[in-house]
Image (cartoon, rainbow, N blue to C red; front, side, top):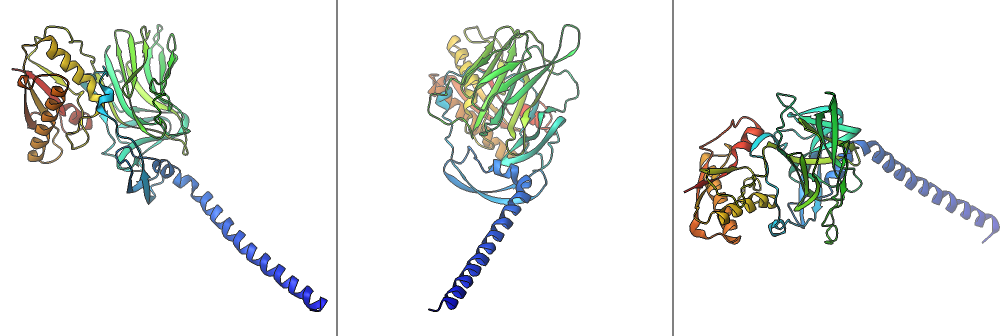
Length: 405
């Protein structure tokens, strides 16, 4: 080939390859720019795609809504390990018997701020992980939200707080802020930090403490899973629980909380996520080893999966208390009465409440109680003790009563 022709061929190949490369680079730049443009809109959705603890090994199609109200359908592969109720066999947390606030966020629209809450600082939005709605705190240092209540002071000397939180990898602690007054009558805010490693620490108490998650050596991944948090304040003592463990005890708290807030350091990429918030006055009924003289025990501490008779593991604190009463009073027999709210048809609620009562009986029998001491009855929604017009009222109506026979 002549030198001139060879040079021409080389130039032709060079410009062809260069043009092709520019085309590829252009497409890459376009894709990158598109991702940048969509980064903020999709930040929450990326968090949502992490996991759903209710569907191990299943692939589900979930429609999620971000804070800009943009609907986007995503396919998420969910891998989580179900909680075994047996792991809670030594659980001793018993929730308060008078519910003052409850919210599972099912009444709220995706992408909106929840209707039963107040925003003090930062930003927040209701969104979904799998099929379950949760409260995402997406902006703020510190972001702070609190329940909408009729009075500023609604906590008694003994109260309990429960919620489920999603320990997203890279996120900060979900903080329960306890509001009180100091000796001079000034507002005081104390922190109870539920870390995404499972530990619990405190801040701005007269004395502060911290403790690690006792189950860290079990080989299970704590992050990117749902966990149950619980707190009880009684007789100037505070106990904090994560899952089946009592993690932190403060014998002398030194404050008298009157209300609560939730919050922490949140961002679009690493939001703080929680759900199923329940605040109740009273708690930890100390009846074990005592002569039982009351006509019945009314408890909200035995809970179930939504519209199911499957007992949640955190119910074991109340069930252990009932077993203690029965063992301390061998002559007592109980009728287990199941009650629901008015969600669903009366016939469905009657059946569901009977199934739940039967499930409790079976669980108590498995814990060593003779079947002859237990009977069951499902009342459905026929005996409400509160309004069914609010989430807190419906939570009050969803209860189990142990009636002495």
